[in-house]
Length: 105
Image 1 (cartoon, rainbow, N blue to C red):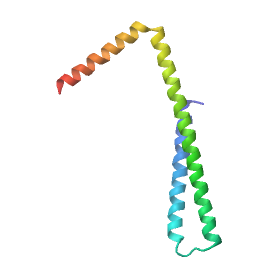
Image 2: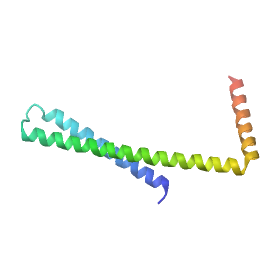
Image 3: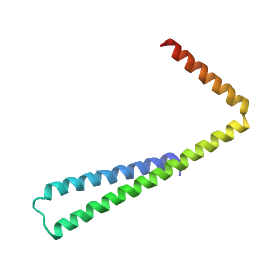
Image 4: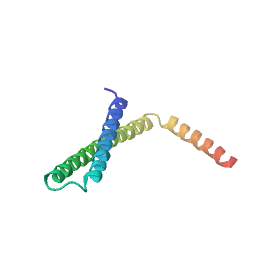
């Protein structure tokens, strides 16, 4: 499975969890006046479970993004170590272009 597909699915899961959280919160606000006892406890439990799912999804997404960032750093370091002169030339070219753009302003 590609990283892009995994990331898109994780983002979709996160969005779904937050939509559920918002929906449950709105339901709580609408029903608060008429609820007492067991109904209120059940609704609070549902909202707590939605929050927990959202937190878990956020934590998983953060971990996934950290792993991808670390992989990118390692790949970049490997390329620079294998091709030092090309890396210096690329950095000089980017610096030159940025200098031209900055001078135009």
